[in-house]
Structures are given as C-alpha cells and as structure tokens.
Amino acid sequence: MSGAARAGGFEDALRGLADGIPGEDASLGDGLVALGPRGHGFAMFLLAAPNLTPGPSLPGFSTIFGVPMLLLALGMVAGLPAPRLPGFLARRRVSRARGARRVGLLSPIAARADRALRPRLPRLAGARRPIGACFVLLALLLVLPFPFVSLAAAGAALLLALGLVAQDGVAVALGLAATAGSVVLYAIFGWLAWAALAAL
Image 1: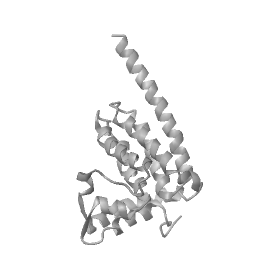
Image 2: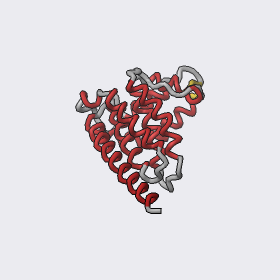
Image 3: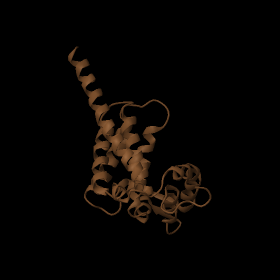
C-alpha cells in the first residue's frame, strides 16, 4: 500500500505513539498507554528488534530485553488492557520533538512492513492471552544464556509483535510456528550442551 499509512498498521501505531505525547514531553509509560491494546505489540517489537541487529550475539545481551518482555507478557496473560513498564522505564521522559524525529526515521521501515501486514484472521490476531503466554515462553528463552540461538526466539517474538500491532492473524500464525521451532532449537542446543559437559 502506497501513500497514506494503513489505519491500524505499524506506521499508524508509530505515529500514535508520538501523538500520545500531550505536552512538550511525556513518559514512555504514558505513550504506550495512549496506544491502548496495540501498546503490547509495539513494546514487544521494541524489545525483540535489538536481538536481531547484525553483529555478534554477546552472552547476556538478550537477557537485558528478555526480563522486561517477561514482565509485559505476564501483564498480557493477566488481561491488562495496556502495557505496564517497570517503573524506571515507565518514568523515562521523551520530548515531543525527539519522538517525532524517531518516528520519521522508522516510518520508511514501518511502511514497508505495512505492505505485507494487514488486518486478517481477527480471532487469531485477537487471542491476546494465548499470545501473551507465547511471549512469556519466548522471554524465558531469551533470558537463557544461549548466544546466537536467541535469534530464533527474538524472530518469533518480532512476528507476534507485528501481528498484534497490525491485527494480522497470518503474522501471528507464523509467530506461533516460529515459537514452536524456537523451543525445539533450544531443546537441541541444551541437549548438545549437556552431552558436551557430560563427556568432560
């Protein structure tokens, strides 16, 4: 889709985050609350994406993002309508000007994602608690000190997050399949690590 952002899409959610700043600045918590139900997906996207950046996967790097993802995911399972960040993150202030600049930088990426994402399979896209349970599992996998293998869990979380933001059940289905694959991959990696230790 070219031109205007698709309503309810990822780019629309980005602009909603910036528009949620009521004055000259606001806290991150206020901005996510302004997104309503889409705030969970957007927050999960921000936490999953750094784990997919190019470069070496440092031990413990994914844990930094896995812990807040776990807290937000537990909120989803509990039925919270909007994400609640840990206090030190929720109180972090962001200016309207800075928010607008970040949206401008991310908008081209969001627009490309919106070409593939669209509202479909609403029952699957709206299964927030089961999706939250998957995020809990993926967050626990990210917390484990397994370098490189964390890419699989981060990729699955990213698909689920995009599906939540765009209400795209197909992206959610792909994320669920990727979650299952991540569990299998972690199990294989854990078994190999155990076998290597046992052979010492």
